[in-house]
Image (tube, rainbow, N blue to C red):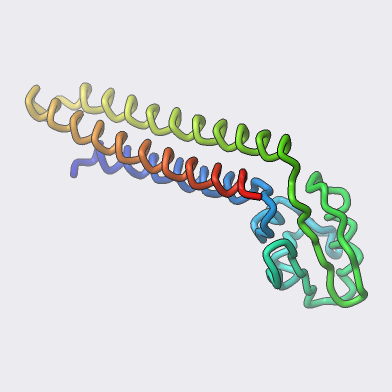
Amino acid sequence: MSKHTDAAEERMMKSIDSLEYNFGRVRTGRANPRILDAIKVDYYGQPTPITQLAGVKVPEASMLLIEPWDKTALNNIEKAIRQSDLGITPSNDGRTIRLPFPQPTEERRRELARDCKTYAEECRISIRNARKDANRAIDRDEELSEDMQNAEKKKVQKLTDTYVGMVDDMLKQKTAEVMEI
């Protein structure tokens, strides 16, 4: 591969990573520890991610169990979860925090599926922008003959098709997961 296709593929892979991250934060009926990634806890005056303060376990499909290493942080973790927009009420037993994930309603599942489609479309746009930028760079590269430029553009298009296909597969899988009762 050339420097142009390598750069395009790197950008496309970053788009896929971003989509995976966004999909991981979509709340389904299943407990997923990644939903806590965006929540910061005030720990000795520093905003700290929950995963740096506690072990997060999934004892059953619809429950997260948070076990702080420092028990004094328990109330701060609970407070941060309550103030977040998760829509889940934590229960604190003095040693651990349990987060029960209720099954979303049919309407909420459709909303979540729409959100997933939006994330997927943003990713497709990002991949197409990477293709457009690579094609522009190929056009400006004076070292390449016209035939070589066309060959490079075909490689970039093939990469684009591959990554857009990955997005479609990921969306299909995530939508099925969201719509599952």
